[in-house]
Amino acid sequence: MSLFKERRVKLLALVVLISVMLVWRPWGGLEPRARGLNFGVDIAGGYRAVLWLDVSHVTIRTSTDNLDSAWNSIRSALEDSLNTTVNLVARYPAENRIVVEVGKSVTSAFVQEIIGGSGTVVDVQNSATPSTLDDVISKLHARIDPYGLLETRFWTLGENYILFETAQLDYYTKELVTKQGRLELFIENELVLTDKDIEIFGTPVPAGRVYSSIPIQYTEEGEQKLKTASEGKTGLAGAVYLDRPSDAILIFDERVLNELSKLTYDNATRMFTYTTTEYTGEELQYTLRVPAIGTSVENLSPEALEYLESPDGVKLRALLLGSTDDFARIIENVPARYRVESIPQLSGESKDKWIKRACGVISDLPVYLGVGSGRIVVEASLQEVRNLRTILSNKSPTELSLTSEAEIGSRLGAGFMREALIAGAVAVAGVFLLIYYRYRRWKICLVFIGFTLCELLITFGGASVLGLTLGLPEIGGLLVVIGTGIDHQLTTTDEVLRGVHPEKAGAGWRASRTLPMIYASIFMTLAAVVPIAVLGFGALRGFATIAITGTVLAFLFTRPTYPKAIDAILTSSRASAT
Image (cartoon, rainbow, N blue to C red; front, side, top):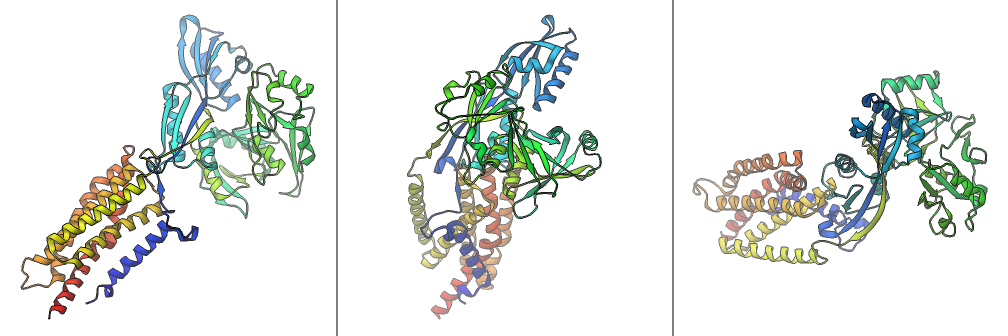
């Protein structure tokens, strides 16, 4: 009987071919490359970046000796005004002092303006507690690598920095690690909802060719706020902000005003106003709730300088609408108390969208309201809105900013992949010689090596489909798959060649006797690694996941096929001998 007439052999060949295509992905280029596999930092290198936590410890002398009452009043005022996390760090009853942690950078004047007569600000320091650092790392893990399979690592550096390494640092990854997740919904220029008023962010769905929407479910308090603001209407003009830079002033090149289509600038309020009739046929208008000032990029105008100095310490950042090179001649004239940041224009982005993005606007469509639930429509791809939902569902307790990034090489050396291939080839040759020494049949050796390579290829194919990142733990999982496969093939081959009653039974029957033992061994392996994959244990999750993937695929395709292949070879040998 020919080996390739077996249906299971044909099925295995098809699965192997599909796996090769998934790993190779020739539609991306014909050169031999494993485009479908993601390699971790240890093997292929990647990126290292440093995040700065915009968090402050504020020491306040309370106006009353009842610290509990003072703390509740101060916390409520800060949370309502800043829409960020506020925690009590320490309390000193003898001195009527408390130390609170605010999840953003603040100044004494800024906090004093918010808390009013509840106390007096004594000191402000930029630092974070260990629990806050751990909380931020937990949120970032949930955003970037929720299942622990992408080889993303985080470490704390001092009191305000987090170092992280990842294989890819593209635009979307930067968005995931630098956004805090503060959501604000303004209706008719009044703040109506924040993320605290939304209980559930649903799964994003398409809402047209260029739009996607996020279903939301309000809290009881949020629903009451909407009822008061909407007065029974089903669509209202408004703006939804993500991480609105309320502590910043936007500085723009005054020539930008000549290129706006739907935005206008109000010199009296120092804010932009957006007007459109696109969505409902009626004129909808709202004001971007971020102060802005225009100037020449050659010289900082006296008017702009006066405005920058006027807030008396309330604003902390100066956002340049453009690159630092565009404003190189005026940066040194910006008052020193401002932290200067730049917001370059994206490719193909209009001036209107650029300014709205700088102000944190993620949606200026009508806000669709309902009883207990609604939806926010965003002009973005479904993937971008999924990332947005990930950010909103894992709000960071502090604001975050990317301070530096650098490309790093493979820890195992630039030639690791080449050396690994050489080691693999030597291992295959060694296994071939040992199998031939044991059985003295080169056909069995070829089938043995062929099935081992098939298991490796289909495991790689499964890793490609699941989007797994291959690092050192995953290589350990591959060794488990290959090792158990070799063990099972030896068991099957020995049973076929020796047999319990060779004179009473054929090779096929004897081969089938090994399957229950092999399946029992597979289930024992799964019983050992599944709990590791479920519970995590750090990098061991990757090890367990690749071991499960390879073992399950072997159970489905290679283990039942190998006895058929051995039976076909022995049958062919007996026929040739006669």
